[in-house]
Length: 374
Ligand code: UD1
Image 1: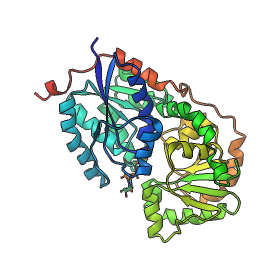
Image 2: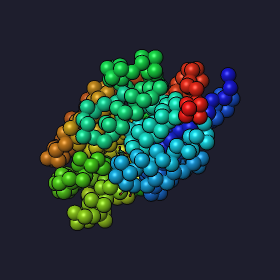
Image 3: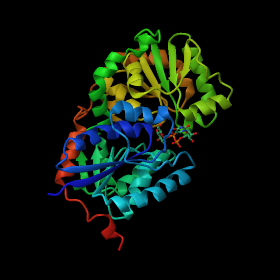
C-alpha cells in the first residue's frame, strides 16, 4: 500500500496535547505515513500556543493560518477560508481534527466538502447542553467525520443514536493521557509547588475560562468566594487570557496575593506538576477533568453538565453545578473526594495514538480531495 498523507489541524491549547502523541506515532511509521501539521492560530499568545510546541516536541507546524480571535462566525469562517487552499494544494488522504473547538469544526467542514476523509479524535462526547459552543462543534464534527475515535464508553452510544455507522467508531483510548504518560517523569521532576513555596497537598488549583462562568455576572461572586477559601487553603489560579481580561474589567487585582494567587497561564509540565501535588482542583475545563482522574487528584467541576461522565463514574470528578456558592464547600469536598475509590478508565494507558495509527494504516479511505471537486 502507498504511503498515506495525513493532515492534522490544531488551533487551541488543549488540541496540542491531544495531537502531539499522534504526530509522534505517525513519524515513527515513515513507510506508512506522511504527516502535515496545520496550526490555525486560534490561540496565538506564547503561553497559550508556542510553549506547547516546544515542550511537547511537536516541531514547527508546516502551515500557520494565523486566524486569531473573533466572534464564532468570524473565527470559524477565517479558518475555513484559509484552510481550503492548503487542502487543495496538499491533497491529503485524511484530515485529522481533535476536540471540540471552533478550529475543529471549521477544519472538518472544509475537508468533508472537498471529499476528503475526516478523522475526529475525541468523538462522541456530549454534554447535552447546546448553549455550549463546544457542543455544537462536537455534534457537527462527528456527523461529518468518517472515522470516529472515541475514548469513553458512552461515546459509542451517543454516536450510534445520532446515526453514525458502527464501523466508523474506533475505541482507541485517550491521546491527552498519552501525553501525560509520556511526560510523567518530567512532570514529577518539575517540583513546581516546592519552587513556589507551596506545601504539597496544601493548596487548590483553580482554572475557570468558560463564557457561561466568566463572561457574565458569576465571576465576581466566584472570586469573592475563592478569597474566602484562601483563608483556609492557598488558591493558585492560572488565569486564561479571557478570564484575565474580565478580571481586569471587574477591577480585581490580578497581581498575585499570597493566599489567592492569580498567575499567568502555565506551560504543560509546570501546570501538571502543580496539579499533581495539589489537594484538589476546581475547574470548568474539559481536559483537566480527565487529567485529574488519571492522576487521582480530587476534581470539582463548576459546571451544570459534563461531556466526560466517566470522570465522575470511575474517576475523581464531582459536578458542582454552575453555582459559585458551591465554592464555599471546596475544602470539605476535596476531603470527601480524597477517600473515594477511583479508577482510571479503560484504555487510558498511554497507547491511544498507537491504536489510531493502526486504524489509519488499515481502513479504506475516500477518493481524495481534488477528484471530489467535480
Ligand atoms: C477556546 C475553545 C474552548 C476551549 C478553550 C481552551 C471554542 C469555541 N472555544 O476557548 O472550547 O476550552 O479554547 O483554552 O473554540 N485570547 C488571547 N490569547 C490567545 C487566545 C485567546 O488573549 O492566545 C483571548 C482573546 O481575547 C479571545 C479570547 O481569549 O477573544 C477567547 O479566545 P477563543 O479562542 O475565542 O476562545 P477560548 O475562550 O480560548
